[in-house]
Image 1 (cartoon, helix red, strand yellow):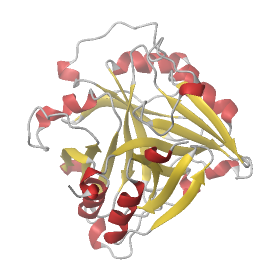
Image 2 (cartoon, rainbow, N blue to C red):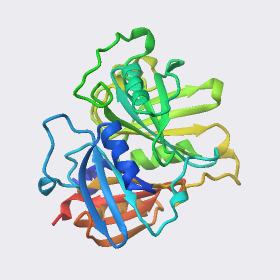
Image 3 (tube, rainbow, N blue to C red):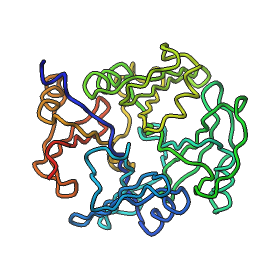
Length: 324
């Protein structure tokens, strides 16, 4: 069998730059209930690796691999005192590509009440068509966070507030969302080259856009039609992180249009672990995507490379087979 067909990839990290760890870490730990899984420094930068961990399942950092996917996806917060604090900012204009992350919970109202009690400003929960019951708020740097309920409002049974969780319910790091200009090109890149699978396509006629949800999973959809509404509650109950694209109709036809994808937004990209770095790079470059190698990443203690997707978002490739 050709070795390229055996390439395995897994979504591994979502990286945001922060202005003040003294504000960001308490927010993600004490307000949202994430665990600081590891802290590593290089040059002027400090990297904080966060994730949701079930009570009693914490793992010593000495035993933690940042490359083998013991956690579905890390939230990586990067602090660099040499960068201006306002580099990490709230999304200001619709041409900025990065949008949000989403956290799924069994009861959005319970989670919102917990946030409000802790002084967090949260908009009112609402059922958005046949998409989801949700609400939004912002972290200390102004990054948008969405809460999505497992079930639509009409199907939901209220949950009791669980004191074991900061949000009153066990949460899951569900979505990483950004905008793409050409949905066909992006879907081809992430599915054919990075091995993701399209789980759901959701057309929002009233707003003039389409949402696409992708993940590395073999889970069987309740309905094989990725546009079927009946799949959506199932989607919000997944225990792993998905990538969500928003495609605003018509952007693909505007030769002058491009989303702002540079690090000025504070979004530094996402990362994928792979067990076949050389083959994956060859595959990407064979399809016209230039990769840049880093011989030795002292933070991850492995080999890494970088490639840009069709919109220019930076994608980090992390070699699980080369971990020291």
